[in-house]
Image (tube, rainbow, N blue to C red; front, side, top):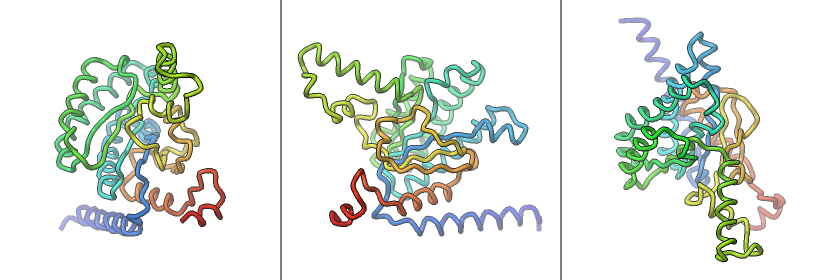
Length: 268
């Protein structure tokens, strides 16, 4: 017997037991419908191991696969991943090119499994800034999964909330200018209907890995009443049990939406 292999087998079994233990603690009647994740810490994960930054991004793809599987298995309906921000275009060209290629190759490689697991792919963002090859190939993957009816996986790519809100404001202003809408008719619902996320419910839970306590220009309008879960764990180390732990933490909170705890209890 190989003692090293035996040790790895034992560790794998323990991890699987931990996953199932946490999975079984989740109340299936109180799931967040929509989970959004800021996948932070790839670069710091690589640096801590003496690796190049792009190697952290490569490892982060494994976490994307595992967390998508976990979200689908537990019954979450929508999962939005902050994949590439508009600010990321300002990073060194080599890193940007590597990231774009990695995203496309990873999604193409995972498309068959997405279909197998009934996961529908979509994306939101400023596509005018994306390389044509990335946009076209990702759209092919979106088309290939369009018949799926389970989890909807949304990639926020070349995305920023300020860009999104600016675009929504322009759309609304154009409708007012054309006489299709009166200024006094503009409501919060009007703004939501003109955002890139108009087809989806607002996130119930925001997860941020890497330990930073900020939302980084991500879904600013939509996160108004989301529960926020921050973990110091870098994204490449974020596993299924970490996701389940975030769901359990979410379920332990009382969502009041501006009401008092007493009012929430009265309305139950």
